[in-house]
Amino acid sequence: MSAGEAITAEGLEALKEELHRLEGEGRQAMAQRISAAREHGDLKENAEYHAAKEDQAHLETRILRLAERLRNAVVTEAPSNSDQVEFGATVHVVDEQTGRAQTFTLVGPTEADLKSGKLSAESPMAQALMGAGPGDVVEVAAPSGPRRWRIERLGA
Image (cartoon, rainbow, N blue to C red):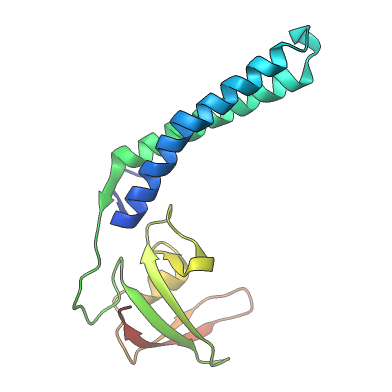
């Protein structure tokens, strides 16, 4: 995450919760796993011990990365009455080719989760939507060719 990366208040809370969980429960469970593996004898030939130590290194790397993200996070909220798509906005769009309607909320890249409608503000789709308003049609490059999306409305 680069210095000063935008994140929603909800995303910041989720980041804090994950870091707290990994620093507490995650480290505790890893220590128990390593301790149990140590009891299996010679550490040089103990695959379970080496796997647990490797997983511990991954856990610590994840914790460091989350702490770095937390230090650099800048909470950015969506404007409540904007008539243009901006970071944090919820936008209702229709695929002009298929007629399929979708709703996206533009969030920071670390919060993105398409299954729950959270679209990274850095994605090509979000970049095409930024600055557009209801009634506008934007074109987004897709592997199958360009797609045209019509903005129906903004807001939840």
